[in-house]
Length: 115
Image (cartoon, rainbow, N blue to C red; front, side, top):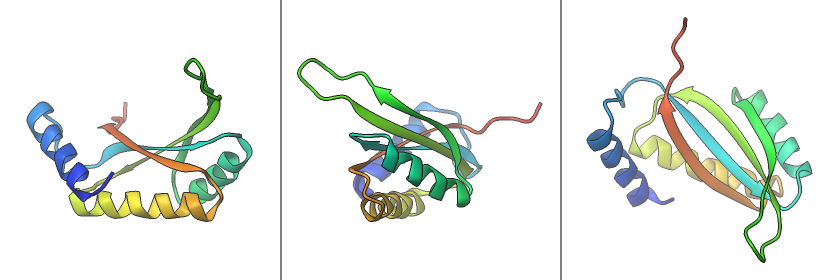
């Protein structure tokens, strides 16, 4: 995801949600590897930086494809186009540094509310 994709994401969010994009949102980040072990090491590293581990799971393969594992972490934070682009670049570089095959991008949703 490059800066233009990030700008398009924010445009889409502004047009299709009623979320306050200047407030904290729940950002999910995804990493992919053929085995789970490097993802567990990355999860530990990210948890030390304040990310919450959601899960590491094996993705069911499509016909003819090999199975792979996915790490999903989350953090409530505020982003704009520039800061999210920077975060994506940092996480991609971290994945490479830690021997993980791919930083697979992110998703976003409303931050949980305290009950």
